[in-house]
Image (cartoon, rainbow, N blue to C red; front, side):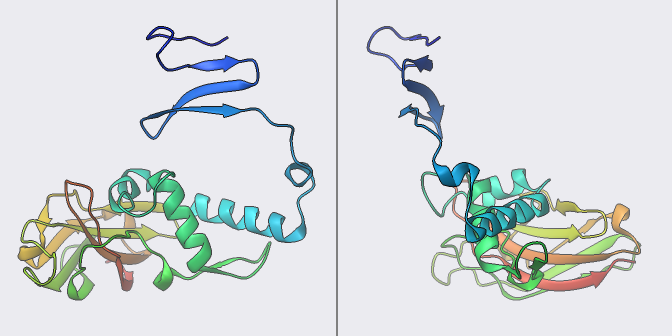
Length: 215
């Protein structure tokens, strides 16, 4: 059953005959139902491989949705930020074929956009167990790089399949460094990235800052 909450000239919500109305990316949309295509139920080997690869990357990104909502917001229209992150990394950071996919962490992007990233970014373990320290050279004023761009340091632990990142707003581009504690990762191998974003939805292409053994 469909509803028209704003009257006859308002948005259609629900199904009316062959038409379904819904809100998608803050837009009211209408779509028609179709019969399932043959390749929906009988995919070709290439289609099956691609779908499985996207599922592989989707599992990798579990727990990162709040991050990529901010860092993949700028690039690509008509899809959610999470879909953009999965699509980019499935196409750029994975090699092999089903079932032997390999994720290349140095090719993974945790942010994409037009903001300049930092110069000479680096990640190191801190003196306190669980601490990770990120540094970069401030490039404020070069291109669109601004003093108040939010620095977002990102850490992923493959063993635990967990993401963490510093709270946006903790550090600015001009600060040149940020540290935060991940005690749950102590003694484990992690991968690290640095990216920048703004409150207005701009973001930068992330930079991989290496693999670390957390103290």
